[in-house]
Image (cartoon, rainbow, N blue to C red):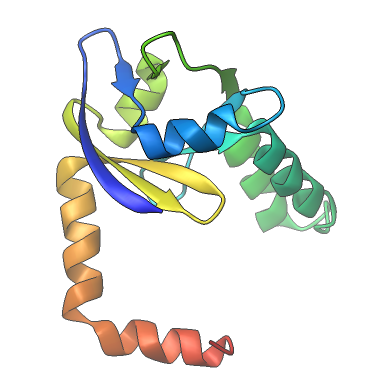
Length: 145
């Protein structure tokens, strides 16, 4: 949980905030999976959480055209990674380009993953939610929240 601002360096290294590192280091293998997110950001999962995501995905109807597109999007961009000794993760150039990551980034803790956002994209996303809370409330009510 939480939102943190960090800079991505010229080599593509991004420091992971201490509260997130604590969760990562508390997992059995400390491994991570980095992938693209349909919202234009990146998603960073522990390998344990990634296993849960893939188990759910296995239950989707594989002959459905949109499921195929989802699989291709999610899995083709997924790659294992680890924290270095300074608590950073290396974001490859293709991932940085997809999410427009350069300079200041936002790391957002979402239930089972960390989203990594371009500053402007995150501020737009957050402002849209704040400007239209009734839309979100209505959608959540429809889902039983």
